[in-house]
Length: 585
Image (cartoon, rainbow, N blue to C red; front, side, top):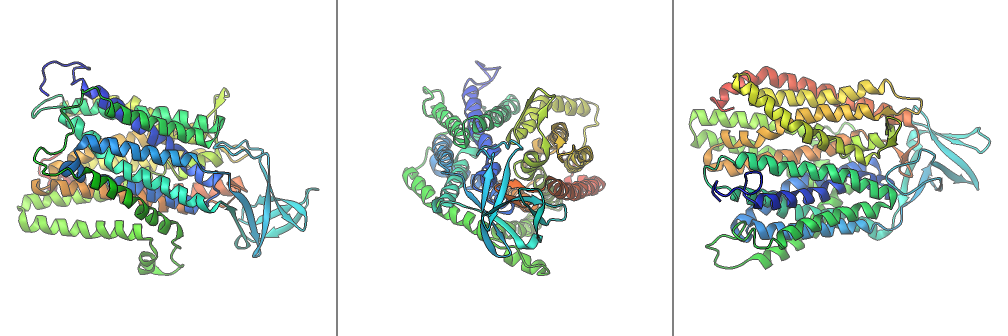
């Protein structure tokens, strides 16, 4: 479409429909994501380690599958059919999450002997009341479970005296779930993963098709389009947890599914508005769509097996070393790390052999920045895992004494700050650019890494003001998200642009794949980091909030300072890297 006849904010009128389509798709995804870790730990009583592993693997696959979905759309399906199919598959995944069955029944194993756990004042919802109590039944006596600061467990009799102390390694807890529950969870996240692969890359492709070559409105159009992502996240991360608390888990996931169906309907029933966009290649001899759709559904159980392997993989034995750690990795971890480690030197070797000296140096700069980008997203993506669990266990979620938000709703801070700060950051970079003082891409990456670390250290500082229940004011968590959002705005908008500018023209698509692969690796490692922050629970709740707080403080301190140091190293390397970039910024 040419620049003539603007209809919607000076842009092609189809942008409004694609903006709304993306908004509702993100509404579904982020609404589901806000609830997922809490659903796994509190309803199904999976351990923190298992939950964070599932979450990390799931978000890693969400970044991998678009590589395949984009390729299939380009060659066979066209973007529009891919988007519609992906929307339906993702909606099916959200609907499956609605049918979680009864809550798991908790148990505790003490000195190898299993005992039933009785719960009182427990409501099967995302938000705990703070009045829950859990007791273990031993010889018909009901003993309350209380965690101690050293990790041991005290079993307290009704009269208040400690009937028994249990060493940390002699106490285990878990939950009994119906046999089909795990299958349903894996089916749901596999469907979401596959559907996302078809939807996510191709809706952006359709936006790009709205603008002809040289149309100067294209960047502004994508800016408007991406605002739909954050608007959808802002709405869903508020409403889906609210419904889950007021009505039940199923209602929160149902709202996410409805959002996804609205997204599908906007494309399916477009009234001919998108007839000229997102169509299959004109020279396609045979329509392969039915075969591709069947193949995608056949792939669902294969993805389920990857997640099952992720859940069942045991950690490496202490002292096993690097080789032992690698061998203990689940299949997904081996594939991600193996592909990334092989891809980087192979691509650089190709650039050295086929490109000029200048092109090779630019490729080195790209790979260095991709590596640092992986570190950033590893820490930033704690939002849906360890930070959500921290909010549930160690955050006072009262707002100005007027109302409370839930732990799941704390994820909305990032979307809110993106919507409010993105225009301001854009104005800032533009103003600095006019004065010739806009930071280079390596400097922005370094600031982002230092910023994400500073966010964690800010929250750690706030833990020093925790109340008597070992809970930190929600404003410290909001401050973390504010700092993280500013850091995100330093790195996220320039990443893809940097890849297209620094890559050899003949392998720019491959480099885009490496970029997304690096983010997938980051998501996986984010799950591993969150596993380090795991806290033992009984019936989905921590038994000692002080021990929980201490655990999070230790992990957040380590990763906070590590990120600040890595960011400082990148800032020191910024000038040498910029020389390798040969004027690209």
